[in-house]
Amino acid sequence: MIVIMNPDATMRDKSAVIARAEDLGFKVHLSEGKERTIIGIIGNDRVINREQIERMTGVERVVPILKPFKLASREFKASDTTFPLGNHTIGGGEIVIMAGPCSVESRSQIIETAIACKEAGAHVLRGGAFKPRTSPYAFQGLGEEGLKYLAEAREATGMPIVTEVMEPGLVPLVCEYADILQIGARNMQNYALLHAAGESQYPVLLKRGMSSLIEEWLMCAEYILSHGNTRVMLCERGIRTFETYTRNTFDINAIPVAKQLSHLPVVADPSHATGKWEYVAAAAKASVAAGADGIIIEVHPRPDEAMSDGAQSLKPEKFARLVREMKAIAQAVGREVNP
Image (cartoon, rainbow, N blue to C red; front, side, top):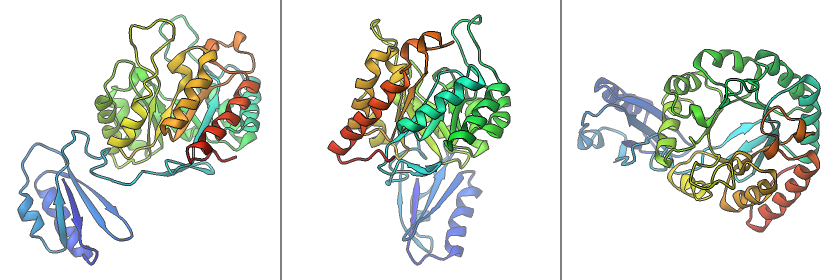
């Protein structure tokens, strides 16, 4: 449930409500705004007496949260969550563009691609140093060497880095180099990893599992939020269906649905959603119109030589054209892609 305090509630009043909830075995999340303080009471299945809380000094009203995902829900936080990514803000109406190769293959490749993406209008650099692959014989990434190359690319462009982390033990290492932790579709329900990402207090890009319900996706975000880490982005990257002409089926519905159910920013991944570069631009532009707060796109200077996902990667010149088109779409629906 949510306890909404009166504007004139004192710190003593707030502390009394928090102490009551904690004594009953609940977790408490305090959100102090300019006009109101909200105390979220989250946790076990014990019943808490709503009327007793409402009678406490300084309490305006108590609102029950009906959704299973508590901290991620609009019931808990009506306004959109926003936070900075480099010089830009995610979730505040501006559309943040993330771009780069699927995998970091070499120092020269990632720096070349990063500069091209920056010049085309990207705000965040993506690139995989650790790669979960279907086949154990496929390229698995350069590991820490790849993270070092990403850090060099950040120095060259000023763009923050988003890269995937695959296991809890790697979180501290990835945090040394990256700015945003990506949890991939295959790891969406890796609960130990979710806990570790939450504890890191780093921004997290949480991809939807390929066969996951929207509610399951939001419940995984709840694991991260439960550690007080509020900088979470939901990423729709397509789901597995019976269709074979695309790699996945892009669930464009998930963007407005997630934004209605949750206050968290929603990012679209048209590259993994379609699996073919020919369809990426159309899916990306549809995402802007549907309300996505960010777009993440795979870009490679020579896709035919890419060590992973070359078929869905845009060449830099095609990416630059797409950025211009996304800006036009954004303006048409009253939104903005900043330079």
